[in-house]
Structures are given as structure tokens and as C-alpha cells.
Length: 147
Image 1 (tube, rainbow, N blue to C red):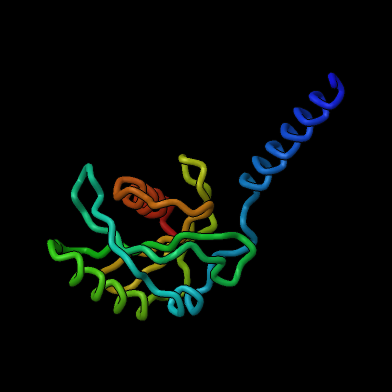
Image 2 (cartoon, rainbow, N blue to C red):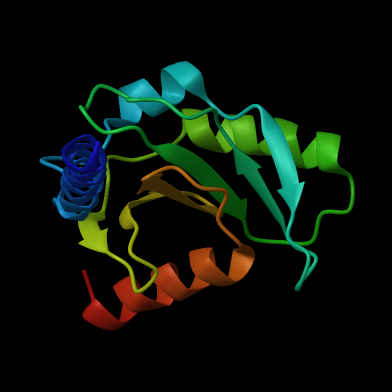
């Protein structure tokens, strides 16, 4: 019985270590713009601390082995979430190839940055719903590096 408990505990510990190690690995590549455009964005979240809007897509591999969350933020003030979603979908269609990444953020996520006129896009892995503060922080980090 003692050995069985030890074996289960050890197996669980090894599994956790393997998962943690994989989460730390740098993705081989950023998601392709074509893959993002094929999926687009499908819902809007209002960031609670600042009240800004972010349009998000579903968790997806986007042609890579990692699962990503793609989000896009538009310049300007939007109160209507449905209007924001429609404008965001148009911005996704106008995305340019990725401009930066994959880079590791302070919160442990890997991210890739994309641009379109009047918009900033990000793909993050492991997938999470980013806050506006995280999106802006990553954007300024890229700006400071002067890509």
C-alpha cells in the first residue's frame, strides 16, 4: 500500500513537471496571419479596470503545435460591443504578417504581435483572456525594443 501511494504521488509529480516544462518552451513560430484570418474573432470582452474592449477569437492552434488565443484592440472609443466586433473583424482581414515574437511576457505567456491600420493584434499561449493592461504592456514592451 505504501509503495502504491508513493508510485501515484511520484507519477503525479512527474506529470506536473512535464506540463510545467512544456509550458516554458518557446513556440517554434508565431501563428500565421492566414490562419488567424480564417478563424477571425467571435466575441468581445470589456476589460473591467479600464473599461476598454478587446475582440477575441476561440482557442486554436492556428497552424502551430501550441494552442493560442488571438485578440485585437482598436484605437478609438467604442461603446457598442457589436459595432466593435464588426470593426475588429475588418481589422483582422487587414492584418499584416506578424511584427514581433514569439516573446515571453512577464506573466509567463508567450506572445506574438500583429498590426493593421488602427489596430494591434496579439496571439498568446497558453490561451487566456488578456486584460487590456496586459495587451498595452506587451505593446509598449515591443515599442521600447523598436522592432
